[in-house]
Image (tube, rainbow over all chains, first blue to last red; front, side):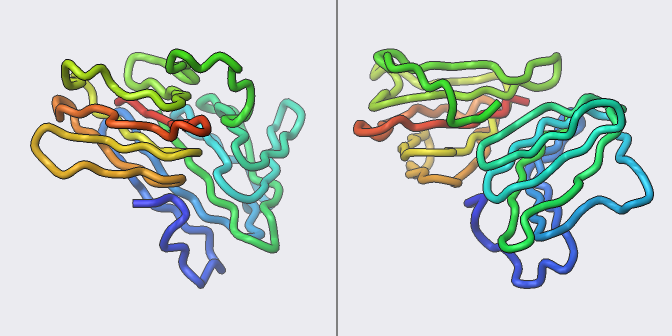
Length: 102
Length: 102
C-alpha cells in the first residue's frame, strides 16, 4: 500500500480513509483539493490529532493562536479541544494528509 | 516541525526520535542509512507498528512470510509479535521512516 496511490479523480468532496483503527488510535489518510472547513465553525475534537502534510500545502487556523501554513513534511499536534479549521488547501493539486488520532 | 529537517550528519548509528508519546501510542521518526537489523535475531514487539517510508528505500524481512521492499510512500502494519527485521536500507542516502506504535 502506498500513501500516494489510488487518489480518486473526483475530489469534489474531501476524502477520508482509515488505514488503521483500534480502540486507542486511528491512522487516516485525508485527500483535499482546494477544500476548507465550513465557514460556520471550528473543529473541536475529543482526541489529540497528530497531522503531517505528505504532499501539497494547507493553512490551519486556530481560535486562540496564530495560523500555520503546512508544506510537505510539516507536522504538528492539535491537542484535544484545540479549536481549529482548515483555512485552505492547495487549489491546483491534491493535498495528502496523514492524521493520527490518539 | 518538518519530517525532513534536522537530519544529523553522523548517521553511523540509526537515529530514533519520539515525536509523540503517551500511554496508547508512540509516533517516531527513524533515520537510517545503510543500516540493517543485527544478524543474530528478529524483532519481536509487544505492540503493533504501522510504518511508512517517507524517503529512501528499505527491505523488511519476516520469519514466516515473503519480504517486502518499501519505497517512498509505502506503508504496512507489523502486527505485535510478527517477527521481522530490516534486511537493508538505501546505502547512498538516508531513509526516513515514520513509525506509529500502538
